Length: 537
Image (cartoon, rainbow, N blue to C red; front, side, top):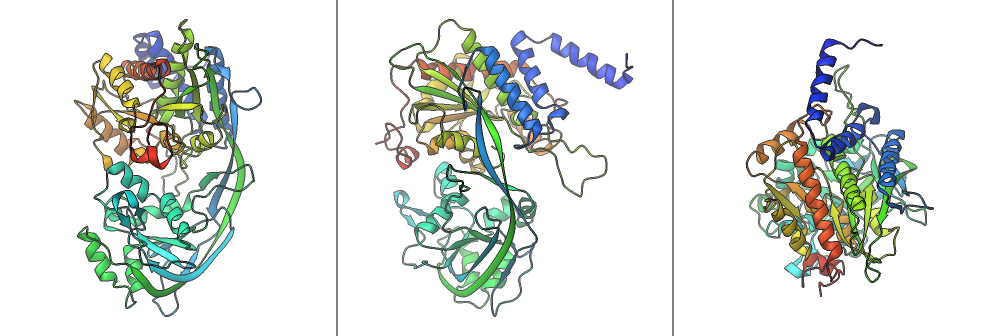
C-alpha cells in the first residue's frame, strides 16, 4: 500500500467528509465534474484522446440513463469534421507610398482555411462600422462602391442598438457576410475606442498564435461565413493612423467621431494595400454526444426539446512565458464540467420518472464551443433528427456554482414564449429572474444556444445571478479562474446550488415538452424574423 503524504491524506479526508454531506443527486453531479475536470482529461480540447474519453463517459452516462442513441450509425456519437488553421510565419501588409507598418504592434494578418497562401491587393474603402440593418435605419455602405475593393471598419456596432442586436451586428461573421454581399474582396478591422477598453490590440497577438477552427461541410469545404470577403488584417489605432495619414480619408475626424460616439465619416481612402499570410491547415474530427428520450404523446413525439451543454474546454496552456513547473492544465470544472454534469443529471431524472414528457427530449453534449460554437452549429445545421423537428433549446453553460444563488439571468428567453417556462420553473424554487447585468459582454452570441437561434429555434441559456453574494462570486471566478488552471476541483463548489440548477433546467424542459403548443418566437421579434422562426411573423 502506497503511503499518502500527510497533506494529501488530510485533503482526501476533507473531500470525503464533504462528499458524505451531499445528497445522492449532489454526489453524482460532483462525481461527473471530478471525472471530466481531472488532470487526466488534460482540459478536454477537441481532437485529443482526452476529449474522446470525456465523450465516451457522457455516452456511457446516457446509456445508463436509458436514453436512445441518436448519433451516427446507431451510436451516441455524431462525428464533427473540423479544420484548424495556424499561422505559418509572420504575415505582411504593405501600402505603396505609406509609412512601413510593424507586424504585431500596427497590424496582424489573418489565417485562412481556404487559401493556405492567402494574398489580397486592393484599394481600401472605409465603411464606418460596416453595419447594415434596415430595421434600425443603418446603412454604412450607402453611397459607396466597394466592389472589388477591401473594406475597412471600426470594431463594434452603434451603441444605440439593443445589446443583443448590437452583438449580432458587431460580430465578425455578420460584418464579413455584409461586406461580401456588397462585392468587397476582403475586410480589415480597426481598433476602436470601445475595443481599446475591452480587448486591447495587444490581446489579439495571443489570439493570432492560437489555432482558429471551423467545421467542414459535406462538400469537404471548411465553413467560413462571408468567405467572399475574408478577413485580411486587423489594425491597431496607431497602425490605422499611420496608414491613413495624409490620405483622402480624414482619419483624425474618424477618431474624434468614434470617441464622441457620433456618426463616422466614410469613403474611399485612396490607399491601396497588399497583404499575404501563409497558414497551416489541418483536418481532423471530434464528436458531439447525442441521446434521445422518446416522447409519450403520439401526436407530439416527433417534436424535440433540446438540452445542450458543451463538453470541450481549452486544453493545455502553451504560453512560453509561464514559469517552469507551472500548472498548465486548464481543467474546465466550472466551464463547462458543471454544465455537462447538470445535463446528465437532468437526463437521469427524466429517464427515472415513469411519466414521460409528451414531446421527445434530445440531449446534446457538443464539442468545440470554445473555438466558436462549432459543434453546436454543426448539430443545428445537421441535426440527427428530422430538420425542423427541434422546437426549443435549453442550454447549460458555465453556471457559477460557488455560492447559493438567489437569482438567475435567462439569456435569450425574452425573445420567445420560452420566457414563460423559465419564469414558472425559477419561481417554483423562489429564484428571481434578473436582467443581464453585463449586456456589453454579448453573452447572447457567445454560447451554444445561439447556434439554435440561427437555425430559427427559440433558445435560452441560464446564468446564475448577482443578487447577494453572486456579484462577488462571479467576479472572483472570472478574474482568477476563468480559462485558467485554477478552474479545477480545488475551488469552492456549492452542490446544493447545483441540484437547484438541475431542477430548474429539468422543469423548463418539462414545461416546454408538455405544453399543448410548441414554443413560439414573439411576434415581430428581431431574431425570429431574421432566422424565419415559428411565430415571429
